[in-house]
Image (cartoon, rainbow over all chains, first blue to last red; front, side, top):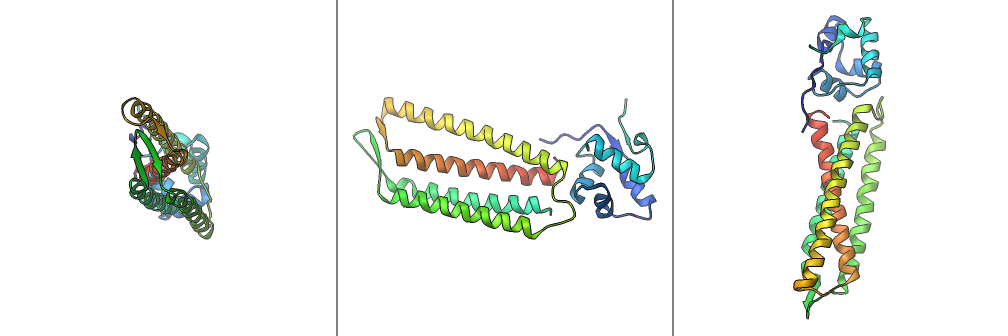
Length: 71
Length: 147
């Protein structure tokens, strides 16, 4: 029913680069639930542009460094 | 587990129990004679009980949702899951209604020439509860596998 999205992301890697930030901490900063962060990291859910920008901004990286859409 | 998933579990289990109770009570309260389906007086009470129990289940689910107030009330994924589950259950309800009406029409030709309004109401309640099970069950599945 739920196909994996083609959009890949580095959210998990970036979380660990930021002092091993927990999923809950990231979720609280972005304003979503921990389950949503889990689904994004697992590639089962594509976030909206707004959430994607919030995540990238929280890591201090441009959007395309966090999320990418392969050719 | 998010509070929306907890609510979905309560609603699924509650609705499944109600649907099972109604489905198991229904055959004993119906009589078919001379092509006419009639109900016993007890069917009204069963319907009333189902409505009251449904309201109680809704209140319990609402209480659980309020009790688990977290930092995030609802996010975009929860909304998407609710939308998809509602859409799926509406599809189920439509097929169920068309099937029930179709069966009644065919039965009218073959066997049943008239239906009691209480029987129709009870069947409608059963379908609604089944659709509720489908809706909240779908929410649980989507919460678990992604959404």
